[in-house]
Length: 514
Image (cartoon, rainbow, N blue to C red; front, side, top):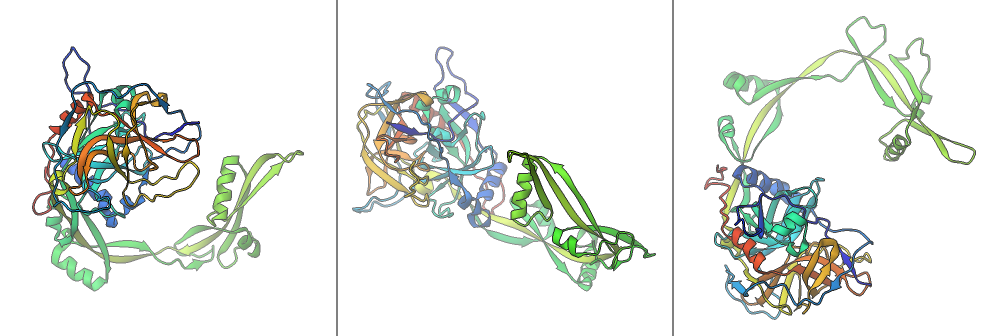
């Protein structure tokens, strides 16, 4: 039985389609990611903050499902719709000789946040373009399935390794994909070309005065330092109310008093355990040492509330008592909670604490255009099937049998010839996908299929991106991956993306540009 593993993010799009001749349907669709420098700055800072904590938190997309459709071999030998073509790659390094596979600087991960708030990633590559600013990946790694929108805070990190961005992060500005993917969720067009802004890196922080802080257009934050009253008095006298010195009233540690205390007092109420309640005196007519004890319940609750409180009680977060009643057949019918409290009268009072604000600005660095920093792979379309390709990606998900040989930390690769016949996948309206024998799992989706890969120059021609994963022999192990066939329509999408213009995010001093 042939089985296919499906990407969790099937690309349901609602891009704004640009103008096209009335006599023919357009081949491409466009959507905005973060075209404004301020939004791009915020996205880059989000992923880089705390030494890349968000990057390390992200997980790959995958679908955990046993009900999977078949991968059907068709009689087709490809979907070429015109003459074959190629655009040459660019490189930034010197050619080197090696018997091993040399990893290209162009490959990396794309990171984004889905509608549920999960931090996700896929694989991708820098690709040659007119403005040296283009990334190629899978369409489902850019557009959210069924949400009619693109993912949030989308960035590309070339050379990603263990939360590090050695050449900076490149924030997506505009995304381009196939019209049929956008309109019909047709995975024959499961690819995307994303125009990215100049690279961005955080270069530290600087403490500044308040006026400079307010004038700063980039990342900034305030730290509060608690100080003594004499330092506060001196600072406030020097700078006045507009300065960084301030004070605040706080409640003092409460002093217990009896209920008949004649001064100003406050009644506090603290929840305790049943054991503490049972050990305490229960003279409710007159308090003991200013304390009174109270039992609230048993009160009826729902089964869902009971389960929640049971979990909280196991974690020590719920101090009360939960009970359940059952009928003659042992079936639960009612659920109850009881809470216990100690009430205490305390003297009213306040204390004053003193603070000084420290103002910091984040110093950012412009890394330049993506293609100038890491180079760009070439692009090929309308090529015959049966091509020798090298496929790169960051696989991470386990195989269907639970074995997880990949971590997603470092890139992996597969080398071989693509199948000589295209395949169909009805679930995703696929009529013509190309395939390759490969055991990489989810996380590798979006990774480039490079024809004519030059191991010395570390460049080739992108002729596909990983889209779907299949267990073709039914042994619960991924053994085949597939990609859209890059044809003349793909070339049209690429051509539109090729002319997209993007910007610098920060200036020479690290300031946010408008």
